[in-house]
Length: 164
Image (cartoon, rainbow, N blue to C red; front, side, top):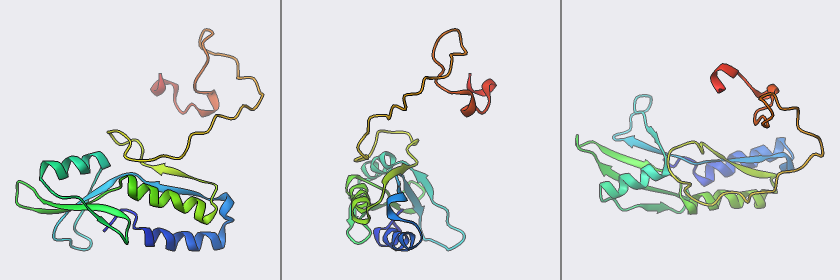
């Protein structure tokens, strides 16, 4: 099954707007894939979470044609590994991410955020437009490290011994 099938996303959003004003909602968009060994057994089969780039690499490696599910708005393919185990891979690409980003305007949401952007590999599609950072007019706190500006104010620093 797709990581975030569009009909399922819409179902959640239709409920969300009954409880939260749309202008206060930021849509979380998945940015990863799942590699499922087959056959799927409920409660037993576990998928491996993979980056979108890794999904494409697997398709190329195994000579698998990437297909696109129009209803789910998601790319997928199948392959057989060296142990003769069949796999089904679902992931996100520019088309699937664009379909989800269009929901922001359709529902009148405040914006969107990409979930799991820390996977290895380059971005896999369009991102929300970048905005210029707001300037509050307040001065930065005094530097604590010999005059260089401190990129992490003390209130956000969880553990100096780990961070430095």
